[in-house]
Amino acid sequence: MTEPLILTIFGVTGDLYRTKLARSLYRLYSEGLLPEDFLIIGFARRPFTDEEFRVLTREAIENSPPRLSINNKNNSVEEFLEHFRYVQGNLESEEDFTNLGQLLLKEDERQGICTNKLFYLATQPSLYATILQNIATAGLAIPCVPKSSQDTTGWTRILVEKPFGKNIEEAERLDEMLGELFGESQIFRIDHYLAKETVQNILTFRFSNNVFESLWNNKAIERVHIIFHESKTVGTRGGFYDGIGALRDVGQNHMLQMLALLAMEPSKDMSADTIRAARAAVLEQTHLFKTDRGGGVVRGQYEGYLQESQVGPDSQTETFFRVILGVNNERWKGVPFELESGKAVAEARVSLHIYFKGTTKCNCAISHSEGHQNILTFDVQPNEGIRFRFWFKRPGFHSSVEPQELSFNYARETNMEMSHDAYERVLYDGLKGDQTLFTNTKEIMAEWRVVTEIIDTWQSVPLTLYSKGSRAEEIV
Ligand code: BG6
Image 1 (cartoon, protein in one colour):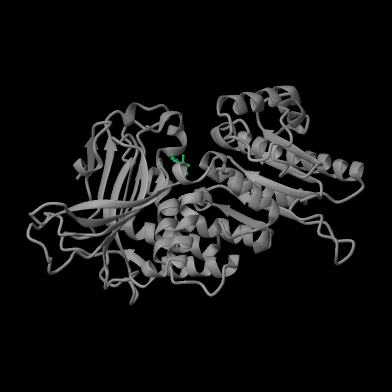
Image 2 (spheres, protein in one colour; image 1 turned 120 degrees about the horizontal axis):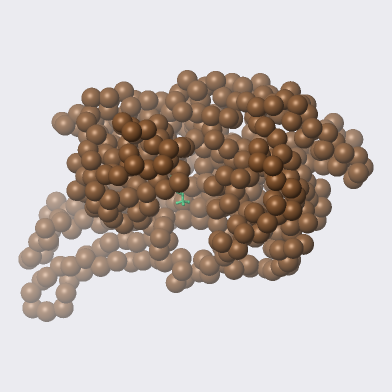
């Protein structure tokens, strides 16, 4: 990417900018992955000067240092910060967006070209509709007219953080609005889990290892378990989280996307459109799995949640959920996909477990209580890796059969420390214009349909209180 770029970030005083975006941008810069000529504009309500914005950014970089650089080209934080400008503005004020537009225009005039423009919505989701409308009213949604067919400069793209709406109706309205203001190739709906190395590896692992792909169906697989456990509480994010809850926060997006990657049909090629269509197709076939016990739905709240800042005193928001889903197609008929997520639970871990059917006849003297089941595990974090459990005979006169693991661990086998984190990838792909790791409308709507089905069912399910640090299996 060599063409000049202006990246405008709305919500730079928020959590996401300070914990993820600032350091990801610095890391891209230090590796020479940003264009030589770039300007980063922070847009927020607080009365900051450019200098104060730079201080905030410097602190964010220093507080969460990026991973080691693969290819350190530019190291100086000071030089990086020279590219930063701050615009004080109210997200609800058309006039402030007009001022922003004038600043962008001036930059274009100064450079004598039409720069590429990327807008990043890192604010409260309730503000998205207003921001999008104001971007359009200020004429910022329209890309520049190319001077010739070779001219690739002048694109305008928009990066939208999740959650995309608070329910299916809001998501539809937002999507309709986005569709009216921008072309689909301009819209990048972020789900940063898709950009995690280990999550990307699900497709590579499935489709590059034929031995597994031929067993990837209901004849060989008994059940699938997707775990998204966090030991942290909602902390300072109560204002965002309350009324949203675990299902909408991570279920509607990250967890269903991982389900889609596990369950989707092989796509005929690796293009963004085909992969996104394959993910959408399987999400459209996903429903609550009806068990004898009903939907198998559990919803919980950790003790002390009501005392978190900005949480309603009688809040019924769930900080834990467990649901069982099924995929209605020939490949997956009858296979339960259990999704389980919680804040303030014992162990922080995100992992996907594929349980293959146990042996019906075991040719061994001592049978194991677990029925000699093979389990394939994707450890998304921490200890990123892939493990396969198999059984072996312990040496000796007795045929004692025990489990062992074939395993691959990123830290051990690769230079994982050097790899890019999810937000670097999100930003980089946004700049390149590659939409593979971003969700399309169909995926979002299918995800909301699944979530709506779950919410309709759990109206009648009481909220279970659990103490902080509980083990997930104790929450029932
Ligand atoms: C975010 C959720 O999308 O993902 C947070 O809003 C959650 O509640 C976070 O903690 C987890 O992401 P990561 O990359 O830290 O595992």
